[in-house]
Length: 125
Image (cartoon, rainbow, N blue to C red; front, side, top):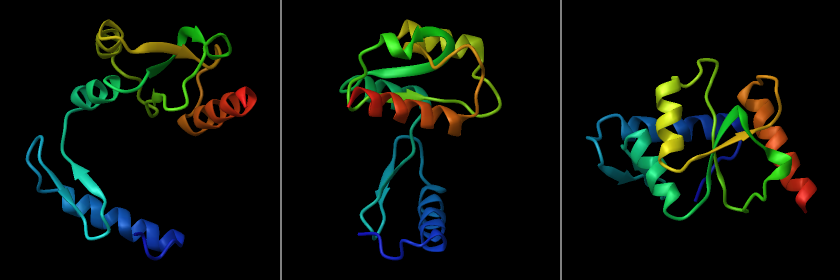
């Protein structure tokens, strides 16, 4: 149970979670006092784990148009920050079954992408 749900309280919780995970060896995990699972795993392994139970999409302006897709309720969306994912890494994900998905022809900030994805779910009802 998360106690203090103010911005300050949530930031403190995140700091404690990051500190708990700082010393973990690869593929190790621990649980905080609040019941939050902290795991140390590679990005590739994490994507593979999600692919076992969910549809995984990589945001790419050359991908399939989001409005032409039928998005499942529990989809996972991979976004990058201001530094694009290396082309080889993106191609590797697609070879492994991750679906490229476009929100439009213009590059956007991750926060804008989250809003547009939520809007698509709202439109679908």
